[in-house]
Image (cartoon, rainbow, N blue to C red; front, top):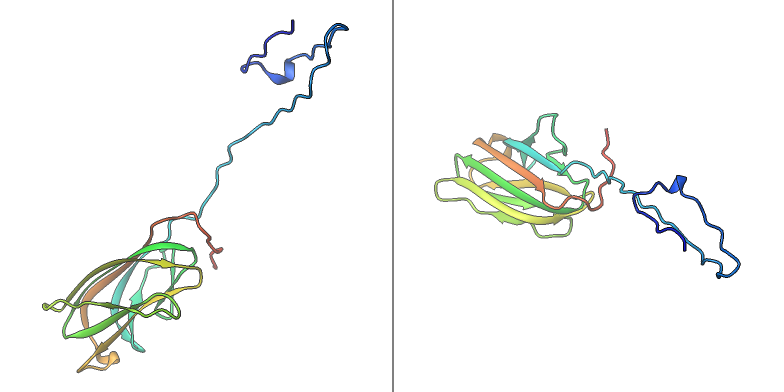
Amino acid sequence: MPEAFSPLEDIATSTVQQPSADTKPPGTLILNFFTSIAVQHPPIQSIRILLTGCKEEKLSLFANDAQIMKVENNSIIINCDGFYLISMKGYFHEEVSINLHYRMNRKPISIPLRKDLQVDFTTVVSLAYKDKVYLSMNAQNTSCEDFRMNGGELYLIQQNPGGFCAPVRI
């Protein structure tokens, strides 16, 4: 009777037993070895932006260089598909109308302004590669170039990493 195979036994040192004349030849034995490979996903996409004013009907976005995501022409460029939490906080000197643009051919989201001229807004939207996120604004009594605000921040944080993600341009 052949020896029982121990899972702890080193396969390289085990011997193959030749069948005896009175036994049937053994069937084909296929060994599959599985190795876990660590899948490396890009870092979770996120950015913190300071809102500094207005330029060409868009709120001006200022991000430091240490951010994972990039800002071009006052728009945040999306490189990875997924759901993103978008949060905006700001303090204004006058009544303004602010819209969040996040996908081509989609109606922008109107961001409500509280009576004390503050914005505290959070939403989750589905974004895809090459989408651009920006804030447009309109003030009744002030041109975009003369518009002033007391400060504000915009955050984008990817909620479900692991989908399609384009290589980052340097």
